[in-house]
Length: 316
Image (cartoon, rainbow, N blue to C red; front, side):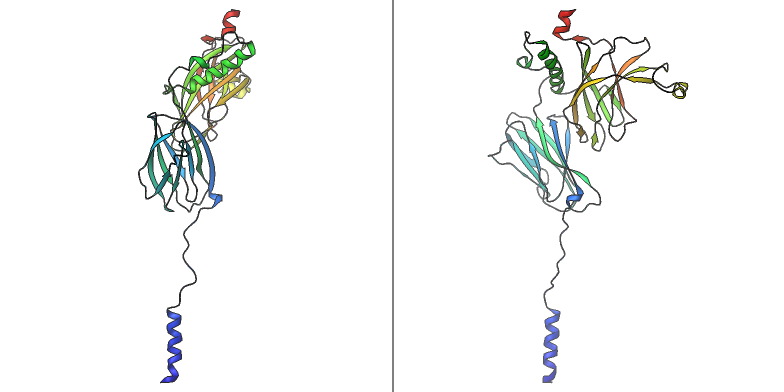
């Protein structure tokens, strides 16, 4: 009987010995993350998607000190606001599971930003965009501050520069553009059309009307001819399509080119206005996205701009 005691004791030790391997919690890989930096305008009519990832934090910078931060599901997401950095809010998921909630940020002047927090979890089979930095700018009225306008006695070079900048700022300060055109993923609103020497300056706003991120392509201006004349081939003309000649672009600018669902971008384009056109031709602003270049949004432009700069008006 004594000979069997060591064998039994050894079996008990094996049965209750601690396991050396533990089930590891899934972790995020840098290969699954596409960092995104965005610049947005505060709008009470827009809810912005904030795409998050476990082990990564998103920084939201407001144009003024933050007064309050509210998270819909504090067990899924954490939002931090430090009085030493009054304009910053840090947001990150605190669960490795798929989660969704909302976030409200209020500033001391009473402006409110609404965001939808989306986390796809720690494990992902493909690379997805993750918001690293979101910077909000102030929402203003329809008119720019008179103090921002260029002095009347400035040089012509400064007038040319200020005309472009002034139109751009004015469009960015429009709080609620009238979305007059809609096609595919884009909605657009045409702003001021200004004559500046031999050039024309056109301001516009673009809205991401889809449920996914988009990237805006540089704007183009075309002189279209519905009768089929242009620099296209004979085969194209026989199909009775609207043919167009490209107008030379001098400069363009966007507040941002990568747009989240529901996000807005303001832009301006400066181009060489043709000296003349045929009666049936019309000029159009062409806006398109990187994933749908063959489905552009077209905005009709007046051939003779209704607004002229001070230098143009005096010359006439």
